[in-house]
Length: 179
Image (tube, rainbow, N blue to C red):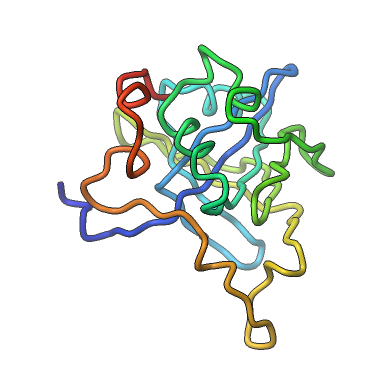
């Protein structure tokens, strides 16, 4: 496929909520798009629950997972929230956000509360959602920079060419419908 040379790419988790229905999906297509104001873009499947919830609420959270929650990320990447409660199934802990309705994820290295400001759909399979970061939650020990020495980046999860979902995805999860 044409995009194989664009890897590795970090996995992110996107949580969403509308009318008390929550979901988490794992995304591999994402990017920062602006520093002022801070903005993040994520590509979501057109027929997925996450895009539906975000389209109604205009809010979402981008969470940065680490190797420690690899199995939960695998579950979120390979199953649909239309059929199960991913917070419950993944054993990830939802936390109340300060500015949006979507929950933070306790186990994530960082959480970014976002307001959806634009949607771009040029394809039959994905819509790019642009979100302005309205609040960030980055623990002091996870902040990086010249004055901070940390190995937090070493434990982040990434997608590599040739792996459809998370590397080493279970056979059962490979067969389940993806959100």
